[in-house]
Amino acid sequence: MQKVKIKILGLSMAHRKGRNTAWMVEYALKAAEKFGRQVGDVAEVETEFMDLATQKVEMCWECPDRPCRPNKGLPWKGTGVAKDYGCPITDDYLARNVMPKVAEASGFIFGCPVYTGTCTSLFITVMERFQTGIWKGYFTNKPAGSVTAATMPLAGQESLLQEMNNVAHFLELIPVSVGLGASSISGYPYGPLAADDDGTVIGVKNDKNARVQAVSVGRRVAEIAVLLNLARQQLGKRYIEEFAPYYTPPHGENPRDWFKLDKEDEEYMMNLTPKTFRG
Image 1 (cartoon, rainbow, N blue to C red):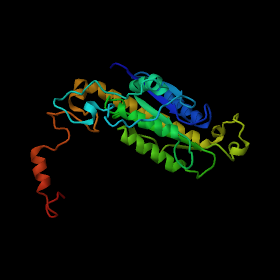
Image 2 (image 1 turned 90 degrees about the horizontal axis):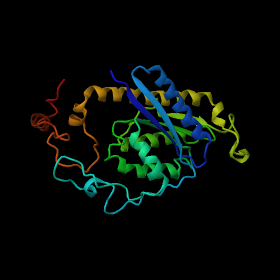
Image 3 (image 1 turned 135 degrees about the vertical axis):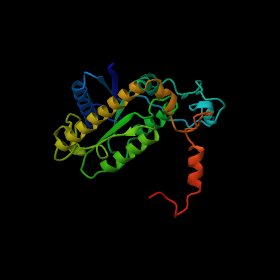
Image 4 (image 1 turned 135 degrees about the horizontal axis):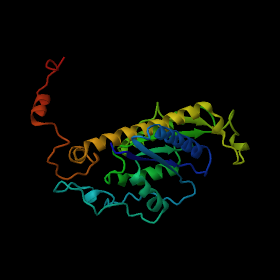
């Protein structure tokens, strides 16, 4: 059996470079690398980390003519996917440096700290720009894990992880974090509070529970990426022929009728009454 090549991409979307969120992402990636060494006979697992703090990332323009979608967001004749589409923003850091890495990735670890009880503006900007990747096959059926950090406990970590997983669902990723993801505390008792933070201390290093959660996130992303890619290798051309490349509209004509039941099943379902359900 030929080894599958796996690449896990970790993205830190905090406003401060090289701090607590970045550390959590890197820690999770190290767990993915450890798993890769354990299954080195069937997979080559490598990771890459990108810290997007201070980088130029243009906001989504929500263009009225939808150039980021196949056929400008309208259904089309034929079964192929139009090639002449994509985000018109091509000259910022995300377009030039991040999207090519996203296209190659087998799985993702997203990091975002809690800001005003929710995500950073950088996180949501990146996720909005990622939408064009759905129709290019960058995300569908790929695993994603989430990590977060906040200065205090009960500061919004859980709700933010839920938001991050929701976004992953909309990108057609498969959120695979244990629980909601990895939650960490960067302030007391592990590190400085905001007023005392001089930028030199990474408090989450001392949060043992956060480290355990980050390992679970990184390992699980790597596990699922290896499983899925081994399955694709085994399926061969059947994967291309029978599995939907993406689900979000628009679509062309599809002779396989992916989005409809077979005629007999449709008739059965439409004729069901409260007294005729199975079981």
